[in-house]
Length: 148
Image (cartoon, rainbow, N blue to C red; front, side, top):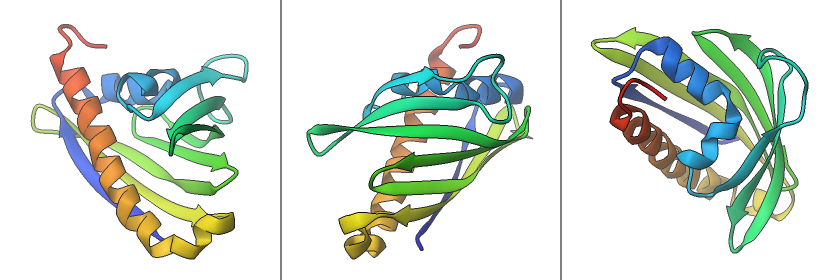
């Protein structure tokens, strides 16, 4: 199973970065492939929160659900993402770093169906996509005066 890992420094406070990322509805603002994301559980965002999202993939939209199986504000998020073609499970961690936040990601990627045939490529492509997505988050948050 491919594992996708990485880290980025975002020059914003840990709590701010955590809260922005934990609200999955923000992801279309920094992930150009994310068409929409909506909260489907009631109450505050926390353990057990679920979102329904759509990702643009090969000219089509792919529905998926995101569920927080771990939620330790402001240090760790444990999302599980499920779609018809892939499931990812892992963690985002948030730690203070010189002048900002060190955000790390580590995903275990489980392709389904025909995607299993190209499992090694899924990890390589996933790594590039994650670096692009989190780079866009960094640009968005650092460009905002006074925070998100």
